[in-house]
Length: 279
Image (cartoon, rainbow, N blue to C red; front, top):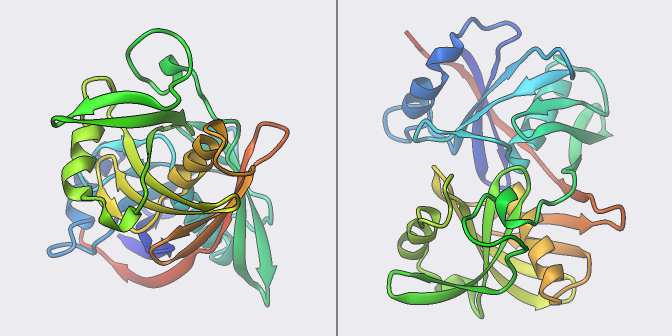
């Protein structure tokens, strides 16, 4: 199986062109566990097969290293858009990509024949508790106390097609991600588990984010997480609607526009291409 490894700010994915490669879809989950292993496989935060679509230019599926399937991933779709354009799979500067969260449309910024940046219309955030999904009474979850592991965290919940729990902290570097992350991810109030973002607001237009991703653990970046975080910042009155989110390997610019849609702009970089013995 021919694959290409691409990363978005250190959030790395193994992409496979299933327009050409013959991989059984029922094997995607088990293949993800093997190929994402950083010691015995290629290593990555996710396995991303790209397939034909009846409704869009392509279908993107996203499998976490534990074999679970994610509805959407902002960094993965930037990587997929760059890959599809530069490899000639879809030679358009505006690509329609079918995901489990619906059709998402990346717009490419081309420089010297290559993709320099990708702006993705991530759609409107979903804010009702049932849309996250999260148990409890109807309404939005904004600065709500949640007990986990003997401590109380004040959370804001946002769905960008996948669930996010945002926690504001005074110093993101001091968060014990490996302890708090799984406690929140697997909390009983999140029936489909959740991604967890820890946000340190610097000013009205900048924030620092650390992330624990559902099914992947600590990652260097999360596109949907950055989008959800900015929505949470606005809901809590901490920032304007356009924020530069500082991540471990670089920045994403997120705007919750007046049309209620969230726009994410950031880079993607190819790492290498190879062959993997999937049988």
